[in-house]
Length: 305
Image 1 (cartoon, one colour):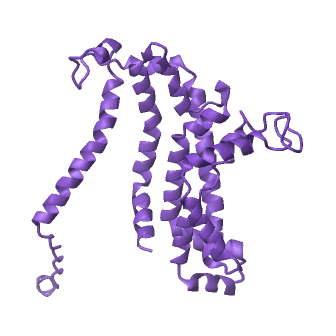
Image 2 (tube, rainbow, N blue to C red):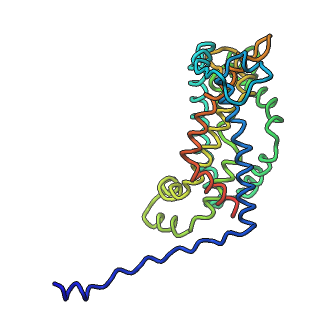
Image 3 (tube, rainbow, N blue to C red):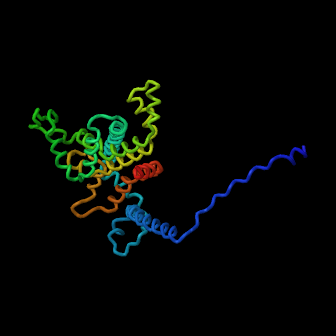
């Protein structure tokens, strides 16, 4: 036993990872990133701390950053001041619908433009690129007119006259923002980078085009799926102007529009407004923390193509 132990080969030591040398450029980079990160975090911290102050303390000129009396009841009172449960439900339904539709339709469009050769595909792609250059607010009026004069909807006749169309309906809140040109562009860039051998092997196994898209190619572009899902949900959740234009009743109001109830004739109720804004911001912070790895990877990969 002793002889066997003497001749037992010793385990090879693990090679030490060489640390990158700390240079002046790297120190300057870290300092710059730290300052930029701090500048981004400060407004959110200020919002949370303000939501925990009393109205008298907020109006005081000598008020400090930290509350003197931590008013956690502001959150309870803000939820009672307006039907925020309904607003949050509506925002969640709209954001989830936009996310599912955008990921599904844009991924299919991106796959078709990247992997299927057909006449006019390049022209269609250039049209999507041109659509990216159109400012968002220039599209609000045409979209509103389309929704308002939608034929055979909301009492309208075949010519779109006589009623209200899709105004104050779920159709107006969901359909116009269902698909974005950026999502189609991003998916196309990811599908272009996949090896041709994958689809060739799938065709040899007898798979059709849709099954190749759904089972073979799409699972390979998870960063794109996560990036589009996060961006779509965030944009839809924070949308204010469009829901304000196309809704009239509280039953269809969204959480961003609901925050306007705290802006009264006597001025904004800052303690309630900051509490409601904090509650409206938390879902996006949580979603980003969950999917930040794929989110960053998606943008980094798309930028290299």
